[in-house]
Amino acid sequence: MSLDGHPHELIERGLEGTLSPSEEEALRLHLKSCAECAEEYAFARRAREELGRAGSVPAPAEMAAMRSGVEARLAAGPALVKMVERNVPAAQRRFGEGDCELLRRSNRDVFSFGSEPVEE
Amino acid sequence: MEGHGNGRTNGASDEELMVAWSAGDAGAFRELFGRWTPRLFSFFLAMNRDRADAQDLVQETWVRVFRSREKFDPARKFRPWIFRIAARLQSDLLRSWNWRIRTLAVSRSGTEDAPGLDPLDRVPAPAVGPEGAAEDAERAGKLRKALGSLREPHRKAIVLHDLERMTCREIAETLDAPVATVLSWLHRGRMELRALLEAEGGKGAWT
Image (cartoon, rainbow over all chains, first blue to last red; front, side, top):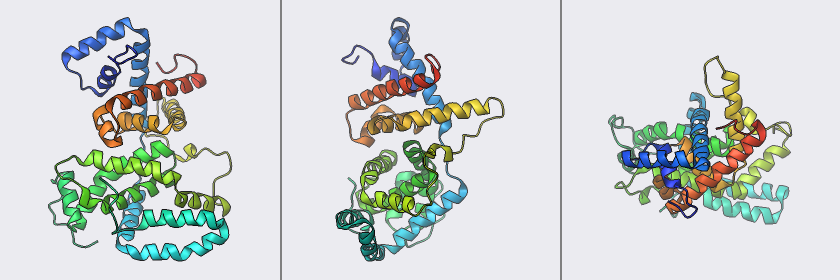
């Protein structure tokens, strides 16, 4: 039971289908006596169903384009960083010095393959 | 990348494939890519409602996965790890100037869609049978649109829970947040979502 008196964890796990039989019974009893939770649960189930259906997958051509994009970037490595740096003066004329400093910083972060790993 | 598939990638776990890719096995990358890209794409599409953005973000995720390969612990699950990278990218990249410059360049070169056209309209409706197909597509469209106006942590939690079908604990691990916070994001996000949808479709339309 959470601070506001409604069993949010039970509700979420009920949606996930990870409740034990006794927890399921506890949820069922709560929903019978709490209109607020019963409404939330009904809405959550409906939205979950819809969202699952709304999930759009990439087309085969999009898959192929993404894969070759990744492979090209991994193969390019540090050469790509240089290429992007060379493009910065053009961007500078277009967007101004302040924005370009941010662009340089961002490119160093995004394109600096082989440098410090970013993930734990 | 170097190396070629060793022909034994099909039955391998995601964790084994990640280790093999780190060691230079390009076939392992392709297998992982095939398994996870549709899910990453769905995540980014639900978050941003734009196919081109989703494609860019998926590619960037894989590049970051590769850069972080040495930090991957094969004793831990691959899913929270890759989605953690994707979720951080979602927060980082949309704020970054690299992203803004690209968006500005597109809008200034005049190739952007007509003003006022919701990117949602470029997302194809999900495949459904002929009966009630239009209604289903309309409802799904409204839901995606409402989702798009939620605050980012709420949206992320709902998309990971209801679309990617993670448990609250997995979401907590992925987003590096306490389970109680995830529960609160889900609850508050749904309340907002419901209010938005009911404002449009009338009370009770979604329950």
